[in-house]
Length: 197
Image (cartoon, rainbow, N blue to C red; front, top):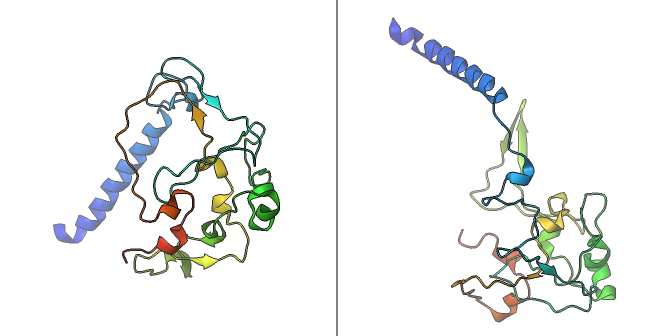
């Protein structure tokens, strides 16, 4: 008899515990965005560890020195000044005025790579009222967007950050290993997405 009602009892218990979590969520204290860092300083602070201010490049685009990537396929750092570039929105993105492949040759800039025009998200299939991930056998789905920037890449400074000069040297024993020397300055990510499958 107990076996018959056990599933129903479990559903009732889980439902009650979920409603308790919702009640507790309302009393949760939210942390202001400015205090989300790991140290007791504003995440928007430009100060370095010794209190000095970081110096960002003010060199105009096209006149700056390019930096090697930190590791293979790392997003490249922005070597030129970025005053007035931010915030980047889906409707206002000054980076695209130089870095779209059709404009890069004329401006002498680095063209956005193929990955930024490729949808790397899994295909979603609708079955009835539910949505399921298409079986990809653990591979990344790649679908060409015919030269249209994929909206997942509109926010350039999510991955690309300006290089800054700071006065404190912090010991770092990391040494990048590049399988090809060409990868210090370019990406082969589109060729390596499914490496190992």
